[in-house]
Length: 239
Image 1 (tube, one colour):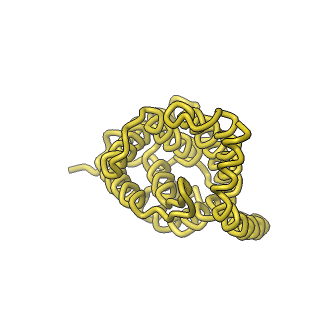
Image 2: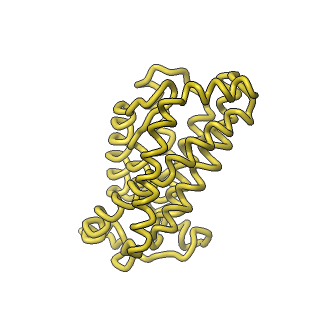
Image 3: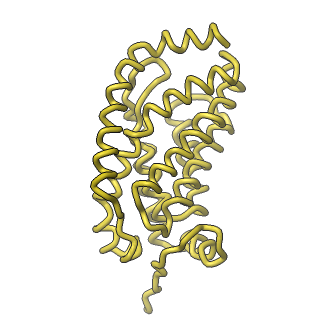
């Protein structure tokens, strides 16, 4: 049986017919479906091992797996992956289903894929990608879901509280993404999951800045977690 060739070319942007055709082909490739299933299962498992910092404040590493899955399978396959991870997570947690959080999971996976799939990875690309997710999805859209679902305070209060959290966590999250993709870069290219000329590029200055930012984030996360209840109460009284 003739082995199906795999197109591993890079695309300058995701808004082209060739890119969409390539992304659509991932939805029927057995290897892509298998990888998506395995990484979705890993993301669901990691959701069960969240690190609690305070009430309603926790750290989860599942975003790393979702980003990796989106990079390997593309933006179209990322849609059902986001839905599956959210729905199974809801079933496992016992929480009530809310369509807004499913939409959030899908948009997050799609944004990851648009930045990572068949693209030349760099520190700046990862920073912009995670910044978009933290600002538009986690803060602006997530605050709207909290207003609808919890009715605790106004949209402005939720947005400010979420914005502070996402700004603090951003350097650490980008640092972890850089470590992941740097570690996985060579083996994934050897296995022909990534283009051979799509090596993760970075400068020493980027690593220094990112390391300093990650350390600063850790230093800020500790007092933020300690005083999280006070900060939350302040915004509730203010808004």
